[in-house]
Length: 515
Image 1 (cartoon, rainbow, N blue to C red):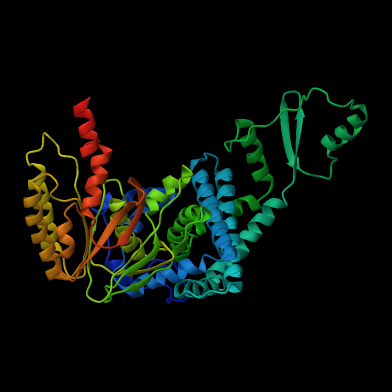
Image 2: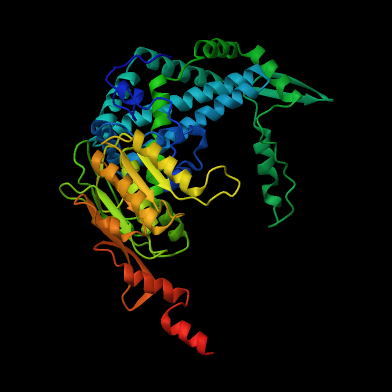
């Protein structure tokens, strides 16, 4: 059945066709070292039938497209509306199951009965959703437009005809009553003529002989849909007795394409929101906060309050381990975070968090934190230093140089770059020289960047650079706080921390040499 109602509604994910066209045929991004792949796997787990991953592989390219989704996400925070949409989705799943079962059955009458039931469930699902949306206080452009579409659809001639014919067919089948007479190894099927229900009579007769708990001799009939040969023969005789069963064949043939295209797509696409809200509810139940971020196409003074790595938080909460949140902000011409501090202090987690915020925010999703502003980027690049492969033709340094060169060649002023511990395979002097060249290009492009490094000198290169430091417990530098704060590098403290960890301080070495 073709859509016949208003054309104002296009998609619950894309307000306009051009929004979808900008990200047509998205592929899995190359920057999933931000652990975004883990997040998407968690979101889509259990919902494989909807094939949602491609939606999460494609950040939107305009603030308007992002806010379109944000408004819908906010509407679906309402428990009543969420429950209505979830119930509709469950009903549509039942429709698909009935249709799939109908195609598997060999008996024509049975196939038609399952097909009829699929249409009946569909009509009820659409009617109920229309009623619920009419009563809902919707604020989003998307859901308001879909409500108008659905209201027009349920009043349209094709749907009213489908609804009425379905009721008629079900009533016809419900009116059929027949008797099976079994005698001398054979049976006869005839129309029901008001005979007594002997099963009820037998139960009443033997009711008085019950003596409490006794062995149960009742037999359970099989529950699988396929009928036996005897059942099929009985149904064949019933069809001959009741001509209305032949009408069902014509009904099914005429309703072969009963699913409305727009309603079907809504059921598919709305799972983007349902799946994401289900996923983040796990962290909010753990006491963490998510928010609807402010988005901008021109303001690069992004910020975040009480932000955290969403993938890591899921694991920590499962292990009943506290999650440390952090804050950050850019002001005026600031564009680059240079993050220094001790090993295992949360620097890489901070870099991943920053990247996740930008990425999830540009999907139109809520983000981890209490208040966040994101920039609508055109491309997101990452370079995380991997383990050197001894069989690789290129060394780690050469590989890093080539990867960073390719990133800078493809980057624009609207890009975001996350660099984590690059050039660690060379000397400090060479690493400083190469890193300065890289950051100079980043500064020239005026793009947003996070650079995790062991080189403190990079933090003072430019006014566009902000120094962020992973802190340790002042009383015990070996204990990490996992807090990343805006302050000047503290290189000496971290050197002492590392020296104490590996017992190579003056005191430790003196004791060992004396022993």
